[in-house]
Amino acid sequence: MTLQRHPGSIVSNPRPHQTMADALGPAGEFWHGVGLTAWFVCEGPYSRTTLDRVDRYHSKPLAALRAAGCPVDTALFRELRAAEQMLGPQEEIADHATRAVETPFGQITFTSGMGHGTRREGFERVRDVITLYRRAWTEQHLETYLQHRWRSELESVAHQLHRFVAEKGRAPTLIQFSRFATTAANHWTGGDLGALYTAIGEPAPAEQERPARLLAGDGYDFARQVFRELGGKPIDHGTWVNDPEETQRQWQLGRLATESLRYVQLQEALGQPPTAKQFGSQRLVWPWPGKEEEGWPVLQRVLAALTRTSLPPATASSPAAAGTAPTGGGHGDAREVLAKGASAPVAIRATAVRVIANGAPVDVSAVLLTSSGRVRSDDDLVFFNHPSQDGVRVSGDTVTADLILIPETVSSIAVVVSIDTEAQPGAVFGQDARWEAEITQPSGTRLSFTPDVFNGRETVAVAVELYRRADEWRARAVGQGYDTGLAGLATDYGINIEA
Image 1 (cartoon, rainbow, N blue to C red):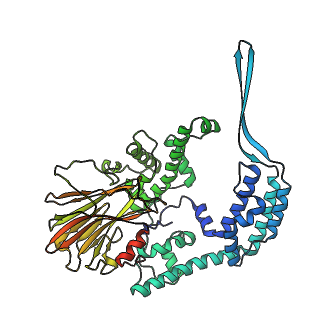
Image 2: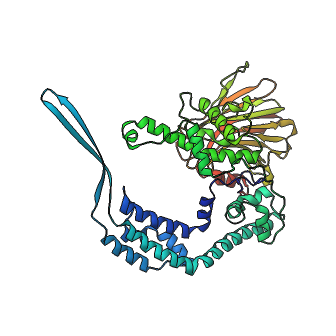
Image 3: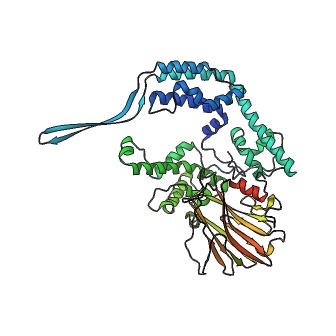
C-alpha cells in the first residue's frame, strides 16, 4: 500500500482484510454491522440497538446500497423482528465468587456476584436468517456492486486529475496526485499509483520504489509479538475489576503495539527508522516511569529485533534529539521574551525560527507574503513537500530565512504551526497541546515567544512573522489561531490549498 505522506514507495500492508473491508464500503459496513448487532443482542453484554430497529440504525449504508442499485431485501428486517420475538428471556451475565471464613462461631461463607450485561438464547436462529439473506444479496448484486465501487472511485480520481490540469496548466507531481488518489490506489491497485494512472488512461509521472519488506507475516501476529516483548499480558476480569492501573497500563502497551505497524511502514518508506517526530510519539501515552524518554528507546529496540534491522543512531533515539521537545537550555546568550504583538529588530542575515511543540505532533511551514498580505503564487507556501523558496527553507521544526536573499516583492514571512490531524485526529491547541517559538541568528540575536493557552478549537496558528520596515527587518510575535484549519489560513493568504 502507499502512505499518503510518503508516496514514493509502496510499503507493507499490515491489515489487508481491513483494506478490503474499506473497499467494500457500505456493503461491508452493513453486513458486518448487522452480524455484530445479532451477536451483542443475543450474547451480550449489551447492544447499541435492537433487531427490530436494525434497519434504522444502519440507514446510511442501506441508503447507499439502494443508490448503487444493489438494495438489501426488506424481508430481512421482517424476519429479524420475528426472530427477536423468539429469543429466550434476558439472562444476567455475572461473575460469582465464594469465600469461606472461620470464626469463633463456626465457618461463614460469603458469596458475591457482579453483573455486567445480559444475554438471550437463540443466536443461531438469528445468524441463519442473516446468512440466508447475505448469500442471496451476494449472488444477485456483488459483481455489479464491486464494479460500481471501483468505477466510482476511479472516476473521482480522474475528475480531480483533470480539474488540477485545467487549473494549473500542467500535470500534478506524484506527491500532488497522491493527495487525492492514495485511497483508491490502496483499494484497487495495491497502492500502486502508476497502475492507477494506467487504469484511468494517463501516463504516470514517476515510478514508485518497492523497498524490502520488514513485515513478512501477518500484521496482527506482529503486533501481538510487540505487545509481549513490551511486557504486555492478557487482562482477566479479576484484574480489570481490582487493578484499574494495571488494566490501563496494559491497554496503553496494546496501543503502542498496534502503532508499531505504522512505525514499520514508515521505516520501509523512509529507508531508515523514523524519528519520534515522524512517528508522532507525543500523541501516545508511554506507560513507563520516565514516560516517552524511557519508553521510546524500548520500543525502538523491540522493533529493531523483530524486523532484524539496526538501531538508529543514539542521537535519533531520544525524543529531544528528534525535535519533539525543548532542549532545555544550552545557550549562553541572553534571550529576549516577546509578548504577543511585540516586535524586535533582527539583522539582515540568516534567521532561524524554531517551533517547539508538546502534546501533539505538528508541522511547521512558512508563507511568503506581499505588501497586500497575500502570496504571489502557490509556490510561496514552503512546507515539507516544497521545502525552499526564494531564500526561505523549512526543515523539520525550523524555518530559516536568509533575509538578504528575500526578493523585494516579499514584504513578510509568516511562520505557521499546524497540528498533524492525520497522526492525531481531533487534537487542538490548548492546555494539553502547546507550542513556543525561538528566533535565533548567528550574530547572537535570540528571541522567544510563548502564546497564551488557546481556548477555541484551533488547529493552526501563525506563530511568528518576519517583516520589512523601511530598510530593516523585524520579528513579531503573532500567535493568531485558526479554528478553520489550513483551509481558513489559505483563504486569508490567497493560497489554493488543493495545489
